[in-house]
Length: 623
Ligand SMILES: *[C@@H]1O[C@H](CO)[C@@H](O)[C@H](O)[C@H]1NC(C)=O
Ligand SMILES: *[C@@H]1O[C@H](CO)[C@@H](O)[C@H](O)[C@H]1NC(C)=O
Ligand SMILES: *[C@@H]1O[C@H](CO)[C@@H](O)[C@H](O)[C@H]1NC(C)=O
View (tube, rainbow, N blue to C red):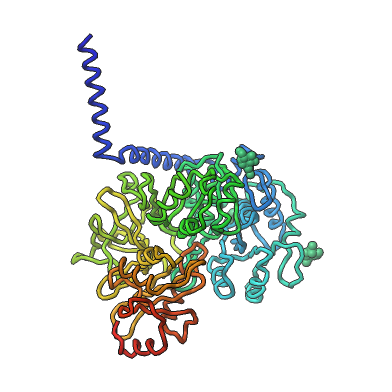
């Protein structure tokens, strides 16, 4: 008896000891195992869906949800509420109206030009029912860009929101020359060449569309075209085919979002984050979407309370904007339990949790056209993901050494790329394979080729160049460092613009900072310049900013010039716009905003006069 209890006790003791030792030696063992299971489940579900007959697409998942819970709320927008069945009916009406149109044939590519509103989602569903690929146009673009985006995916129909009538009329002559059918979502319209489509939709039947309309669609067929805003030049259209869209379907369900969740969608629907993650992701979970016309930091939490939001999405600067709002007593009164997105920096992450309570942040990394993604499943603050053998086996990727000025990979004497060691920043490249293909940009072979890197680890292999610089630490966590082009060199040192801008915004009087490098005659590289905004109730204090900069940044990284603007310009996904700022640089005759220069003698940022500017340009003042 004694022996029995002793051995049981000893065995228990040994197991407990082993578990706690392994927990301290392998602190992420449980998370790694969980991820392994989740990844296998994900792959298994995808493979099962791919094997279904007849072929199973994202639309079919929506129809499944619609039959499962027709009376459940699918969408809330302002004061309107749509159930799954109402959404289905509305999209049937749109589809039937279009199908009845003499100038439309099912399968034609249609461009959608609309801001965030319910009809955006219903029109997409309608077009999916008709087997038409959809180009998601950015509703902020105009004239030449609009025509470029419309034309590059060979669309023959344009469906636009009523409020964009002026923008459409601007390019109408060209569209008419090309024989494009232009439909406006409005009741009444006098402009010749524009059709009042709402009227046709109201009169159309809401009966379901026959499946045969989609019989020619395969997994390789284009589903949507999403435009990626390059830092220079015109947008490029990335083709998302049916296979890729089906893969993306599980983006929320595999991250713990369930049917009872209410998802707050306030990012633009014409981009991947809003469309794929917010909308397509919710179709798989069968959740409720709360749609907003656009992100507003001042209404954010009130909306979350009003609609009982449980899952929020973020991107880029959203978290910072939220942290910048004035503190309120009810900051922690909400039901948000999960935040999914990418681009939150570690300090903001901590501040966000401290202020708004225990929200599980799932930071991930992905790009519209890329063939690799990561998810920070272990909840490590600041990381975007973790190296995992299974993930790496399925989607081989590497970090390689990179030449910051030439902006291309470094190569060894054998012509192959050089792996960046642990702890060193390298360029993320991921192997192009059948499981992780790179479809490329539409009608843009040159840009597509540019994103490929050949002969990376072996002669003949091909990788996708993500354009993102990352670092893997000793614990196998992956950290996003920079976007290629977001770094410049000054005095032989690399300056990371995002780091400098993070430090600037910690200065008491500054709200936002957009950092870039500008050229100075007679100097190699670029010197730092920042376009900043000042906090509402504060004034720009030159010596305060000077002290902050000198205390926190090495000499080469300090922004020498400051430009003060009312607002920092951002793209639809809150990426800062730099091209024009770099071009206008620090010339007081070209910039009407106040300009300042760092002055070590006066220990302050002082106004940049024409006199000083001329002295810099002529080389009298050395920087
Ligand atoms: C819509 O346009 C059609 C044809 O151009 C016209 O007959 C109809 O009256 C218009 N509807 C409204 C509500 O203006
Ligand atoms: C499918 O393709 C065939 C052959 O190209 C064509 O005849 C048919 O009309 C297509 N069906 C649909 C619904 O587009
Ligand atoms: C939010 O939840 C409360 C309490 O559970 C409920 O009374 C209210 O109707 C809900 N609001 C919405 C928009 O679902």
